[in-house]
Length: 200
Image (cartoon, rainbow, N blue to C red):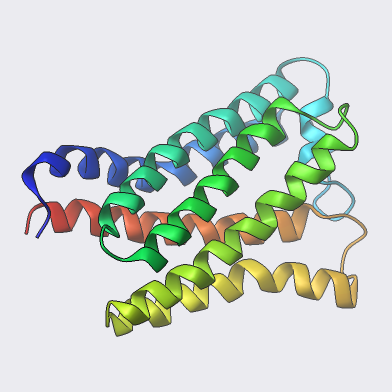
């Protein structure tokens, strides 16, 4: 049962978790709509961050907002996994992924090699945090969440594994989107669980 002093914070964190993909993809698709030359096969999503005009502003600001909201969500994860050190470790690694999202928006492709490093950091930390969280759910004996989280972890990692081994696209927009989408599904489900458990 969630201690009363944490319930409001968990509700807020859970709501942020649900809204993370709404914010992220709204800004990303708005930026894409403003830049017709964008091509899913030939571009990276980050290419939008250096297009002149409103496109770059939408993309970069959207990433920063997404990262900040995701940090609030990660605080909720820390509270939810109170007493479960593995779970708290996963929340910390997820928090590092959130910082990487913010850094991608702040350090666009004009900031080489910083942009590359923070981009890699996000797509590495995200699946790692999910694999660690899978172990946390094993410790907590939550079988359904074990299956769900490990499936999402593989879904976040697989687009990159296939990209590196099969080279199925000239550039990285597709694996970036697929990996981020997997992480978004996980955030929505965990966010809903946070809200639901505060009412228990």
